[in-house]
Length: 93
Image 1 (tube, rainbow, N blue to C red):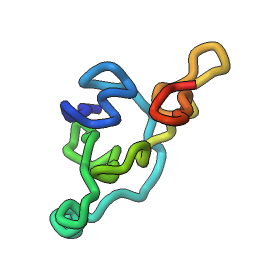
Image 2: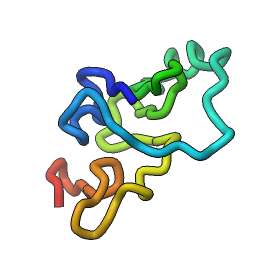
Image 3: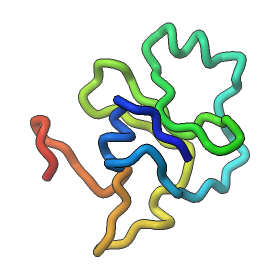
């Protein structure tokens, strides 16, 4: 998956790509994407087929939503960047 520069998702991963599992039949209807972006939902991750896999709210300090299963590659020793960090007061804890 490609993470778009300047997004919270790219900041969390510290990279411009991420390898995550996707098992769902749901996704963002492309017809609604322009309207959602106008209202402040920013697409921040796209898979190889161009499907939206990560979105975030512009201006919100921590809202990032994924359409993939980050927990399948996560463990106690190596948590996924998408789910392994909790932020408090702008700092990771």
